[in-house]
Length: 403
Image (cartoon, rainbow, N blue to C red; front, side, top):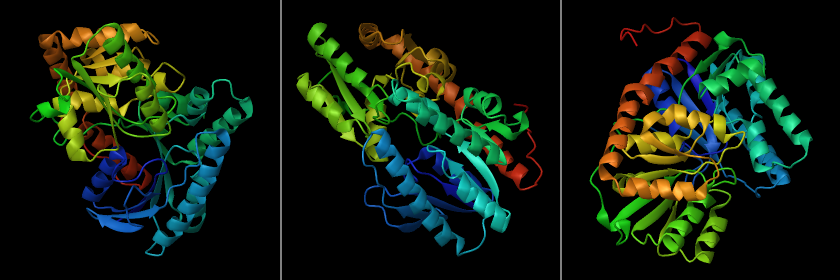
């Protein structure tokens, strides 16, 4: 049995659904799995969940400034290194998988390689240079160049790179010089058995006819303020008092968004849940009529696959999104696409869907079918496990499906 250590910095596990699906796949394949990650609210420093050993440190996020990010990453690196040493007491690791952001954990993998001949897999979740560009479009160039250097070093240090889509794979090959056969696309596929539409809860519409929902991170690059401003257009300009908005999630901009909601006098229409338990998320998404993907077009979002897109489709919900390269690849005909930056067009797209129930149902069925037939984790899991078979020198799985 091989021992695998997975390092995550930006989300706790099992809240990070992609990483948790990876953990479950590895355990089912006979590996012993440990995870080092930050704590979620109320999490213990150590626990075992479904045979996965979770080592957690108290998160520290001093703010969204450039200096704040540096401080946070230094703290996270030191906290992670301490817990890696603690987890190592039970035996050497055969593979270390580091997930980003940030691209700072390759020294830990290199130290393990030197001492224990540990293999290194890099699971590339976000483009950190583009994240910097999107958050600080007028910022100095030096941090961007430093992030590019860290990204390149991480790619080149890894025995194998896992990319979340073909855009990220292309960057690993073209920008970092990684050999094409050392980069595998493993999409963030949802589990359609767990994420499926259930019975609607009419009370979650809060007395209104329709419900529009957002789920995801609330950072500067995520465009959640657009949802609030579009709600303002719908309620105050277009006089659509029949639509409730529920926004699930948290992030650096959460308090600013709540303040914007109150400033625009939308307290009766826009509800923020914060991070919500899975049962409540399922109830909201089973009730919602339209899913909202307000990600603005920027260097990061245009080439990134959004988890919320997959979740809306799993719950048979049509979505409204700005026309971004990877969003269109993921959602296909399950979405209505709006010219980036056109808030009135976004508001009108919501109205058009709300007022056309047959179209909503048709787009919802298309999305659910795409998940079941192409995007679900069951279709990604084989490629993920084949990466591990490759770095461990084991034969790849046989494809008996003809897919």
